[in-house]
Amino acid sequence: MAWYWRDCKMWWKHDLFLQEVVRFSLWCRGLTLLLQVAFNLLIPDHNADAFSPPRLGPSGLGDHAVELLFGGLGRWDAEHFLFIAEHGYVYEHNMAFFPLLPLIIGGLARGPLLPLAGLLRLRSRLLISSALLNWVCSTLAAVSLYRLGCVTLQSRRSAFLAALLFSMSPVSVFMTTAYSESLYALATFTGLWQLQKHRTLCGSVFFLAASAARSNGLVNAGFLLHSAVKAVVQRKGNCGQLMKTVYGILLIILPFALFQSFCYARSCLDYGNYPVPQELVQLAMEKGYRVHKEPIPAWCSFTFPLAYSHIQSEYWDVGLLRYFTLQQLPNFLLALPVLILSISAVLEYTSCNLELCGTLGLCRVQSKHANGFYGPQVFVHVAHLAALTGFGFLCMHVQVLTRLLFSSCPVLFWFCSHVLLKNEPWIWGLKRGKTTSNTALQLLFAWPSLQQGTKIILGYFLGYWVIGTALHVNFLPWT
Image: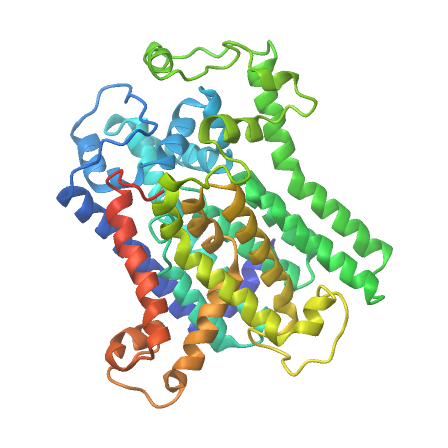
């Protein structure tokens, strides 16, 4: 991987756009941290029916300070990740959360931050570790999105604005808290960039990390499969390339298979002895949580004993059309903007590339769009967006769709960049109002004179960023 870092160093020294992406991303993550502290102090926490394990061990002045500054990072699903990093997979429903993030923040808390053990308990060190990790990962993800956009769109300006939009995206709070979105976005965007550079195995290694962070990382195998079929159809493929594709797909599946094997051994087999603290046993009795092998769950006898699908169905009622009830209408309204944005992106692209879409992007077709959002290389990303949108809308908790799509689909940012540049062509020419090298800030400074479509997109990004942070850190419904 030495060539990777040499390449990054070369880009950093010669690309002013890349430097601005890094600065703006760091600034946005820092602002989100400040916002979560302010909202956590100003707004009382809601007494939500969410996973809330007991804090084990004594807490000191340092722990209270960390809770004051970083406590908002441990809400909703973050409680699961922090709990797993501290105690392991104690309860059955913890197995819905993949292990990469807990392994990394647990390693940071027990390694580089171990000298703080005399001042801070493990939970506090885990909160700090997650904040540092996501600050780094979200910034590197913005860099990878920029470089992916440069290669795919063949337009540095579009890629630049897309990366800036990623830094201030509607899911900024999830990119900062102890969620796996930042880690997943970094692995996915970097894998896609490497794949676009025809480095199949290198890209597959990053996709392996993505599937170790989130279950939807398995979908990334579709990019390799599409690339291989396209090479065969266009008679560019050879046995070596096809074998790389097979190896790459196996790498992507490997983390899921290993984790499900671990879940099966832990829940279904008489394997190992896992002492559980009495406080956690008491919580299991009060809440009805199932501790491993007590009793052996029914899914252990299934033909395909997958813990993940069973847990999603039993504990969160995930399944086809299960969420289509009247009481879930507010959550559908919450996801409505990203649904409209995704459908608009898909329709906009397909309407301008009917012949290309008719061949599923596998055949060469005559097109007046060689690059930019309408370019032929964007097709597979549009298909990826359409597939995730359809699955998320029909089968998942629909409010999760926003963070699922914005952490997985670069084409959403490319589409928004495309619309903003079309609405406001002046940002690369005559400047209005205040001037800056950062096109996202240029647009914000010129707010009164912006087109209505531009205001809607920027208002959505900023509104969900701020309101989402305020609600999420106080256990209000923003998951």
